[in-house]
Image (tube, rainbow, N blue to C red; front, side, top):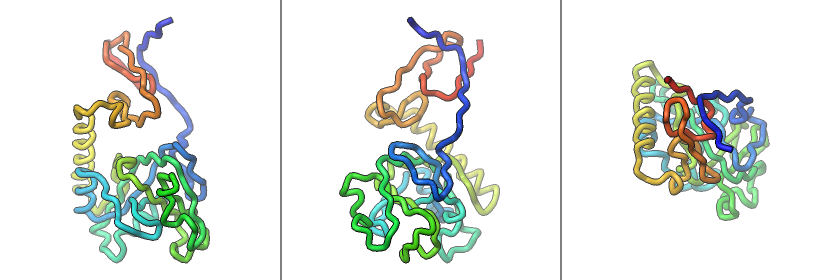
Length: 217
């Protein structure tokens, strides 16, 4: 039996927003944050994140589910040069690192993990703030979706414009979505190839994993 699509909207509890002490689940996408300078924010939005060479958890991109922690960065910089990027992160396989000199503190990726997670108040001397932290190995697992904090409205507007432009460019890419791992219609990361249908009402190509579709006839 064929299903005729004619608009819908899905409502659900948003499991993408975990409190700092909640352990992330493998294979889930979460909202996280990254604090940086104004110029670096521009570069990240337009060119993507770059993996750090090293750090407390080794190479990767350092981010946090705790926006307050992200607001502390860059350290020792003026508040007028601090931006917090709101991110959508495909965590992949997650390893908890909660002790100093953990045997996988810098080798978690070599052991098959995509993200390292340091829970808050775990007592690690390497994290004197006691705030939650994550390190994602592959920058392609991270997408900037909004600006959580900026020095003023003009910079906020500029950066949001860059985000919109980056999303439009991604949507018009000629790279096949099954190669990119992103559905070309709903823009969600695909574990399996998404099924698309033609909307009976407006004739648009739509994905069954879209949370909302509204057509005009």
